[in-house]
Image 1 (tube, rainbow, N blue to C red):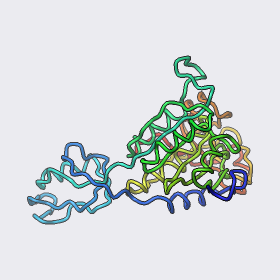
Image 2 (image 1 turned 90 degrees about the vertical axis):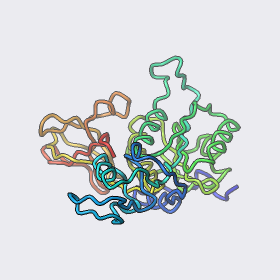
Image 3 (image 1 turned 180 degrees about the vertical axis):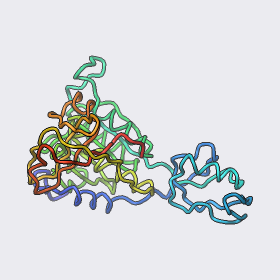
Length: 307
């Protein structure tokens, strides 16, 4: 039990929420020795040294080719193979439990009742280097939610979708651990929360497709990278001129989906599945800004680029 209720938990800025996640997370210390043929995307747990000299790369036998912490790229494995490296010691992929919640979800019915928030989140986790366990949707029932959270405490982190301040899930999590934030000062994921249960970070995300996309890229991705001991690289950007202005709440940082046609970006309204699917990228609007006007050149981030 904790002394505070979900309603008492504070609102955090995006930067503060990331700091809290960084405080809760540490790179996994579990390692594997794997063949070079499956090493792309994995993070080195130990330095990789050459067994054979490679004159064309100025590598001598015994030289360190790559240091621990490097995420292996496709271009790296050729040099490693030439240097006689057949196996690598790598960190195990961090384990993330993804738990969708909601009484209205019914995959068998399809359409708008299909569970898409957690499913989308699971694809991102896998892509960013995590080992995901995607659960079946859990009804808004306290015993069922408690069991679902406790079941995934064997994972390194938990992400729950379909939750908002004051709901049954938040009460369950507050009873099991500590809700650190009940809201994040970011649009459109302002109803997201952050908790810790038995030392495990628990990310509480809304059901809205736009909210899940923002929460995933801005909060869960840094968490997965920290757990993996991998560098957090910036998303690729392109510059484009807004065809119309963007109006945002100056009290919150905002992320706005846009379509891009040539050198022009058009903001999209809405947080639904169709909107986020049509988006070619996202524009970040900082705190204390009411949004850029039409004709402003903005940076458009591509969140779907490979990590």
